[in-house]
Length: 417
Image (cartoon, rainbow, N blue to C red):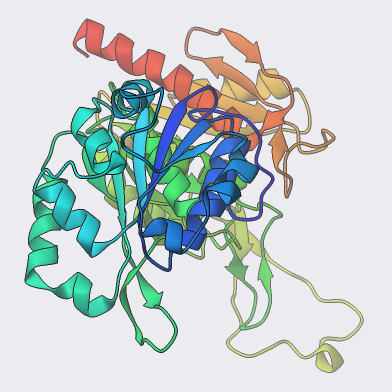
């Protein structure tokens, strides 16, 4: 997500998030996290430990969430506060989770509001460790994390490796950035059947076909649509492999990325992953042609003359030529970028390449297609049903496409296919 504008959307919109904040320098990140969760449509209840209040104030969280932050286990007029917060939460996220807090949580302590909520909640719990690298590496901390990670409904998010507090070296123990924590919270909210345990392959981005060591033939694909699909599938609980051409995007959180440059490299990577995939979503904009000869030295302008002739040859059709690598029960989705006869050409591609769904769009459509955050697509399934979606953020288009795939997976399960 990063600097992208945030607005209410799935799976955060309308959900209740309890954000626990413990006493580490990374507590400043929790203020941004509370703000971002609120902008995504969540109602955020913040619980501060006594040590956390030494780093950040309750008023800061109220300012970004519009809701009061809590500190006291025994609050006048609300004696069962811990029970109420525990029951109302759809997910509990502790960020940062210090070494002391992890030790108390692992041993089932209930000596403050946050640990008491943990013992009372049926909601999934996301713990985001943050501490000095030596504290993180201590055998007792590792044992506590292992124990907590084995609890049903608990997940450990991080830590990252990087700069620690002032005067410290770089190392493991840095809390994940807020945009990464958001995705872990999203997975805790969204993961479930039929996605949990499914292997999903997504292709994204353009390919670059070298002309010489400096220049290449390519297209304007940003990769945003494929990256949004990969991230949304991971949030739903799938194990996702993203095969991506060159983009300027950050890798999706939790997703295994395979980076390629050319169409032939993408063909090889897809052929390798496809036999393990329950779902394959081919969103990459693969170059249809490549220069017949890639020069080993830069073509000098002064020596090329007024014109240069470029001979092109066909690239492999990744979607069609890996067809024999698909599992018989896999759900396969293609994308079609069409400037003419959008539905007719997309239906033809669906039949020729034996797809379950195809997602078609026109790059000339205003605010849709290349290099923008939104898209307007038409989804066509194997039965010929055509669904025209309105202009949506690509994140929401991803959710709509996965909704359709979910129906296909449910149908396969019902028929035993």
